[in-house]
Image (cartoon, rainbow, N blue to C red; front, side, top):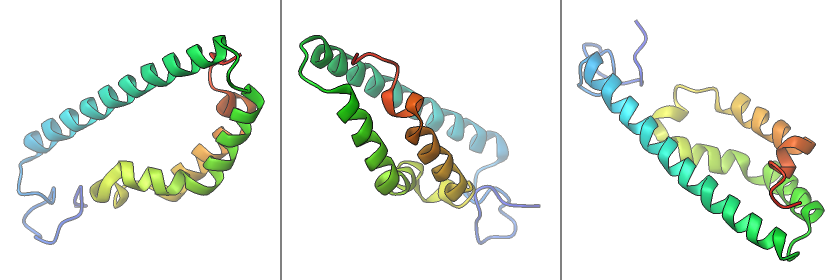
Length: 117
């Protein structure tokens, strides 16, 4: 049986000394916390972009170009940092990174949801 996340003790099948129910609860709490943080940041970024866009203080084309550039050079770093050691070991990070970069290179991904324009 594969350990999730991987551990060294063969008797510890989930790698942390917790039973499966405890591990599932901890994972659920972690995912909920990450989703809450993401939601807060999305709201803040939307408010910032809306204010700047309404005041004509940003160039949406330049922002899209910046998104594409940052995506190419920094997605993997941010992704690994945000996933943490445990999830990096169980997720195909390279494929997820490439999917994110491809999305952010697209018009839809680099322009967001149109709050700036």
